[in-house]
Length: 321
Image 1 (cartoon, rainbow, N blue to C red):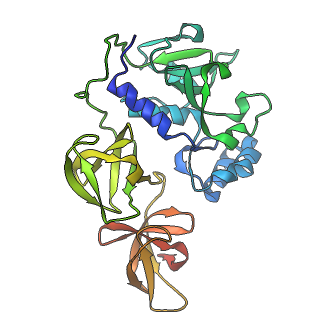
Image 2: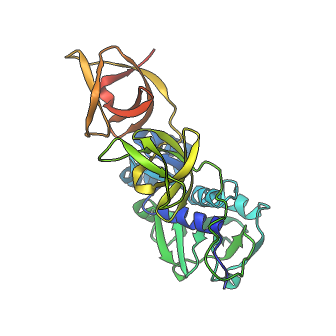
Image 3: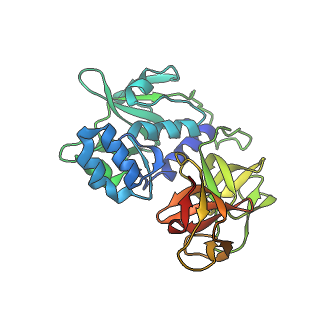
């Protein structure tokens, strides 16, 4: 029986972490919004109804298409894949590949479905133990033109989908036992996240999962997530690398471009900013104060106040000319 390596486990954990994320055709892991959907619909008019109508349910959630999903899963396992299922299949990263009937059942692998003309029309990720996580594409199933946008990233039994091929970028390890605790996790940045807590002003950063505390990280700090392992994320915060429980991290929109704004209001002299949307009040900023907007969440803006992230209603921020 093959031993699951640390890199493979990191990829498995990344796939599981994305369960419940949305599907928008062409999405690359950004937070869905009306503006995003309009842009995608303009780029892919043949999928207009799917994107603009059914896709509205994913506003405010992170979305992927099938190949971008497998790309980020591979990245968690230290592997760089291109975009597009066919381009991935033709890339040179694979150590082994074959038709689906030769799939090794005891190790994770990337899955592909090939059309009669040789195009890979869909891709997913095999977890081992006969379960597959993939980003359902509505064009891959009969009567499910809207199924992808209705269900997004979901988990299914291997036999529930007509996969034709598999490929793995990892060498086989037939040693029995658990993954070595000394294995090195990939150092690439999966995404940026914000430290969050419903109570308290700091969250502990540990040397290893459940290990010794290295430092207390202030709530609102933006960190880099390098890997996801068993309920913890390996992160880099202010130059310090360690492990933090996933529950205390909220993914930020990687496609968001920060901009300068100015605090404004029709009445009053100040506007409140908070720890979280509708959460604890942190303070007030005078009308006219210039702020750096680092992200958006529904009708709230993420602003930087004294080097920390805070939330202010977007209606109270105007864009600098």
